[in-house]
Image 1 (cartoon, rainbow, N blue to C red):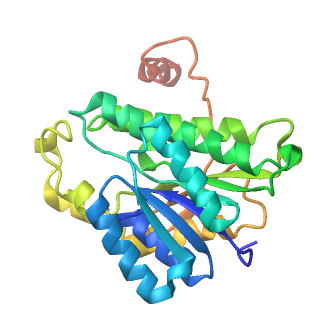
Image 2 (cartoon, rainbow, N blue to C red):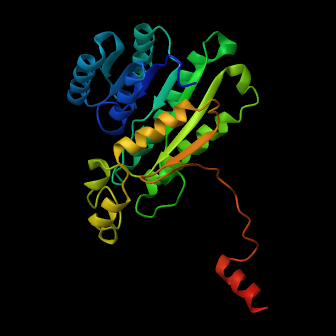
Length: 271
């Protein structure tokens, strides 16, 4: 599957992980249209990649993904540039606990919108060519993190939303596969240079701990390409860290009728 000629629409590609995903895709022979709210960084990345890979293989458009009309128009422009799209990567995101509405809109609502726009275009049963949709969640989509309740909840939502779509009874007829990437925090300024507005209880989370738990951008990008290269990707949740990659499943565990669970364990052990 990784030998397919990918025609890619990617959000949040101007810098960081999005830029790294694009670099790997272009190096593998894909053609990419990317968007970002940061026009200056986006134009710089476009220039860099056109010089590296060729002007016909990459194009940038500055948009605010949370604005529906801008998103829809950019996708239509991408279709004109690429011919069709068979890989959608919803990557744009924000980690700032002081910006509640903005975080929810960008991290979740924009992912939903982008997924539905891409799926409508790709569906084989409605005249499309099929394809894959990869939504970027996070380790925060697999765990409960008290430092980042808003960010964490949006990443859980992305993971659940995408997993639900992958379970559609007509998924074979759609010709679409859904995948979820859940990386550890990347060694970028987004995570390393947070302040006490962007993250709660920052005094309990020293810089040296943040440094120790990050994964290199290159390692996370390898995880992205591993997910994309699967022969069958639909429903896959891939966690990638500095040292390992592993596929995950979310389970609903019955803890019994006593709360907190520790009390039930104590009662059982006392017998």
